[in-house]
Image (cartoon, rainbow, N blue to C red; front, side, top):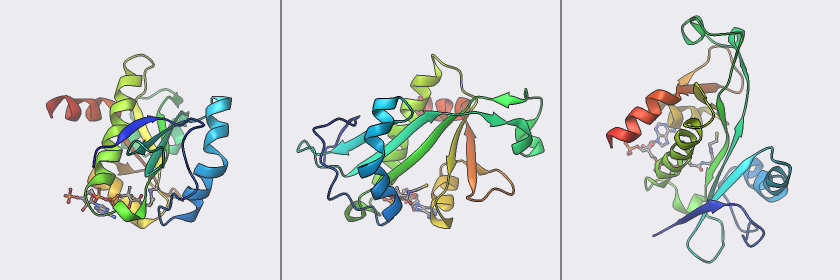
Length: 167
Ligand SMILES: CC(C)(COP(=O)(O)OP(=O)(O)OC[C@H]1O[C@@H](n2cnc3c(N)ncnc32)[C@H](O)[C@@H]1OP(=O)(O)O)[C@@H](O)C(=O)NCCC(=O)NCCS
């Protein structure tokens, strides 16, 4: 299947998207468009040419306080650190388990790397919805921030960029 990946717009059909995680489906339908309009979250969607959404992710700027990180993660950093927040990521349940979630994450991280070439970001940060999501992000090199609920994970943007350029 060839997917078009592009920013969310009014022509996209959101109604039948079902990731198996209702809060993420609802957020796409109710809030993603507002985030686009208000410049508070940039949502990218996948479809196969018919506009019917099969996957999405949302990126936004963020601020991390050094005190919220582990000693190792915070080492020699200023009081406030700029990451990119991968605020949402979901794939339609009909497509789970075929490697497409990994490709969706790769699409999101490629866009983070491009953004980081212009506006500096030390980390990409995600807040995992549940233990399953923690396992998924750990598989791609993200490490948990201790004592966070929901579990927050991060990975150096520099390390992501190095991995992508090695592929
Ligand atoms: C999270 C999600 C995108 C993963 O997509 P997927 O299609 O199920 O996963 P993939 O088939 O692409 O898996 C890619 C790789 O990650 C691994 N993986 C997937 N889920 C994993 C988990 N929970 N723990 C460890 N590894 C996992 C797979 O084994 C695969 O590894 P491989 O390439 O070595 O075989 C998808 O399940 C989803 O949309 N879930 C609902 C929304 C959600 O929970 N989003 C995260 C919110 S923070």
